[in-house]
Image 1 (cartoon, rainbow, N blue to C red):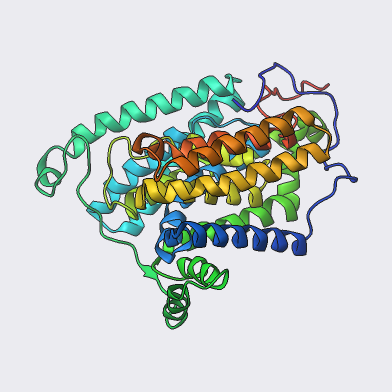
Image 2 (cartoon, rainbow, N blue to C red):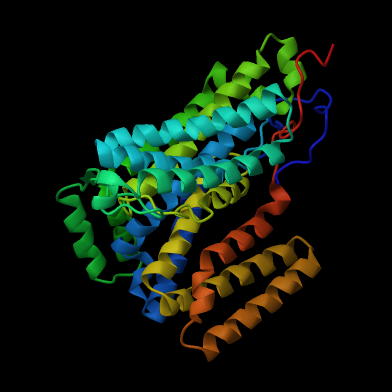
Length: 427
């Protein structure tokens, strides 16, 4: 999916990014965020859809973004070491099943740990297949997805449909309920931000609603996920361990010549990847629903991969992509057609800006296409009051396709991502 399979890695290539490549500074990033929030605030005032930046909307978006973000972070660890991990969906399934299975019998914390271990088991199988035996990464990942689904369906019938589990609400499709994990609300700050949000002021109330979503009824697993994102950035980009691991994904032959145990680093990365995906699955079973449900992951492993690609294999971009997908999902679940209809106006503005940018860069064909699309979407917005329910349900997937299509031109995956590597082949 993210790389073309060949039998040998590419010839020697520099590990570091090009020195001349410009990066956005922190003030510029903050200015872009402020401009985006101002634009959303204008759309909220014009359309009257206050839910766009409401505290509840942001809180729901955050809960939906966490499992996607953890799946994307899992893919990041694996692919930075050179191993494509299409098996994230299966590892998340293992996390949901084993997390709920252990959680209802003991405590939710034991369930979380067991869910992580279930995902790590899937990661270990993927590492053995791809690193030790050189199996095609895509084939191995798809096999893990199939095996995980089949195994959990079998064990659900075996463990949840009999004895004490059945008396407590278990059946072949779901587990008995699991106790809730603690939530955190910042006292004082949460209510103060809520009061400001209710005034409906331009920009200020929108900012208060967004910040309120980050400090109200926050699951401890959400906080743990945030820590893992920060920790992953530090480990992968600020430590010698991370440099060695990333060198395995850029040029394993060169890394081996410098004394790096490429097999070991790939194993570590893929097992960590499985654990993160398992944690994402455990989150689904523990936080929103408190039970395991068949089909609970709903393709979030694949959407996590899309978020990773959107983020250009970097932690910050991945977090942004996961947040965007979670926000779109929360909109269609909480508010339906009217609020999604308001987003059409926002899409018009973004398409106009994109058209202006393309025309300024003399990409005339892309600029004209963007302008025509803006006109069509504006016509849709003016002639309707809400979006059809069928389209509303597809909102997260439409956003996924749009984001990937717009970001495709600037992507730069690890050079040896998905390439088969055998120890000593550079000699």
